[in-house]
Image 1 (cartoon, one colour):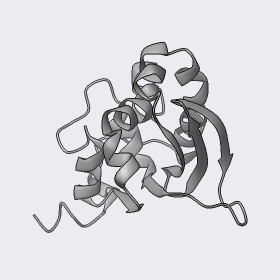
Image 2: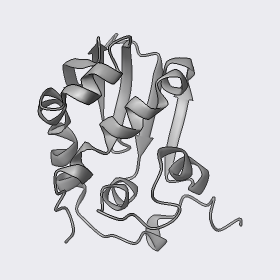
Image 3: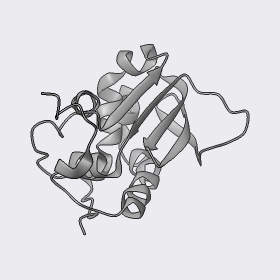
Image 4: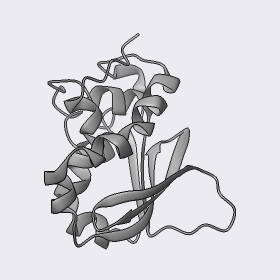
Length: 147
C-alpha cells in the first residue's frame, strides 16, 4: 500500500514525453468548444483554477462551462480557487482508451500520489463529473502521446 502512495511514476503503465502531454492538454479548450453536452453540464460553473501537468500547469478561467482563458503558469499576481495537477505519466495513462485500474480516475490518481488537489476544492467537488469529463477530452479524441 505504501508503494501505491509513493508518487513514483516508474510503475506508470504508459510512457510518453511531457511535451506530448502538455500539447494534448493545450487542445482541451478546442475540444470542449465542440462538446455541447459537456458545456451544458458546466453551465453553472464560474471558476478560476490551476489545472494541468505538474511540470507545466495552466491558469484556466471557466465561465458558464466554457474555457474563456487558458494561460501557461506561472502568471504573476493571478489567483486560483483550486489546483489539480498530475504527472505527465499519470495523464498519459488517464487518457488511454481503457486506463488501467488506479489510473482511470482523477481522485484515484491523487490516492496513488500521481496528482495533487489543493486549495478550496468545493467548486471542484461540486462539479466533479464536469472536471472528470473535461480532463478526459484528450482520451475521447485519441491522445497519441505514447512514445
